[in-house]
Length: 162
Image (cartoon, rainbow, N blue to C red; front, side, top):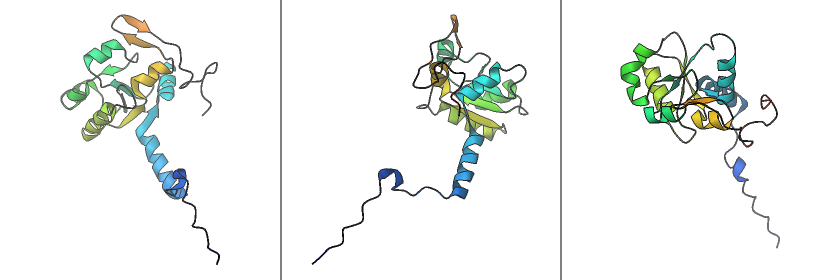
């Protein structure tokens, strides 16, 4: 008697089938509408002229003092509802950031801003990746910068080529 072997279980990567191309287009289009990456934000801020958005740091004052992106507006997340309309222009898109990818403060602030009628995106990676990618930042003591982490940013190149 011969037996047919049981079908192999799918590899964990494909345990859940990939989305259809149409669903993937919809998802990634939406993803890009909600997020900006650190390198793109840095390039926009470094270019001559208006970047077309306001960058908002939603962390506490102590965190802001520890380090923040030059030119960012400080609006702690807990104060968005009461202060956003006085500090920000609704005709200008807002990009929020918090500490890093393990913090959802930027998402919470983005939600609160959207509920107030602002167009908003979140900067992926937050301040952590801003610093890790070697971009300059400001502290309560003045300007600062650390060398780019070779695991997060290209070494010896202007961008990652993506």
